[in-house]
Image 1 (cartoon, helix red, strand yellow):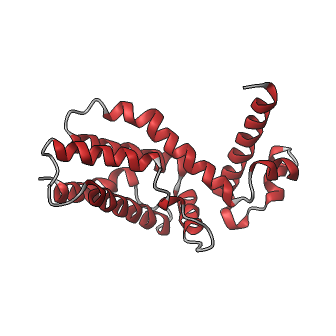
Image 2 (image 1 turned 90 degrees about the horizontal axis):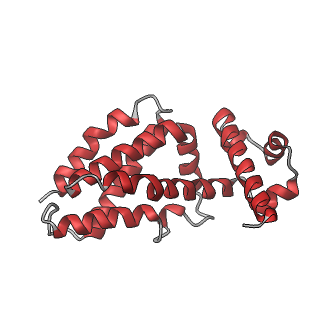
Length: 197
């Protein structure tokens, strides 16, 4: 990467980081682009070079989250022998990351943005790494005889995603008043029990 591209990448990360901090402090709707550029000491031109709007900051955050799944979690869950254990561990690590690194207000804002019918939902993009990870677990787990055979891996992944979104939405509307790390266990265990052979 040349110096110019490196500097542009650093500026983008700086703007994204500052915006997310402000969203946590004040909530998404109360933060303006002017506040973001003031906090970073950059210009409106710099902001709009990297992002079409403050909503686009969240698209970058989604990409970061998916990168975290690929770069960190795949290696960790590889240590598990059973595919049901891989799924359990992946969900535990995911909920821990979301609670500790994102926070309920960022998650709430993500859902707020994703419900905007004028935008294509990032949740529905078929090539997200999250979906590839889950499909791999369900496909290989079904081949190994761990998951039920009357559901396709796609259907099991859809069920898992719906449960995942449900607890995250519930956590958001309760303003993070319960622990995702603790409370996800029972919900996901019921789901896994229902998907096991």
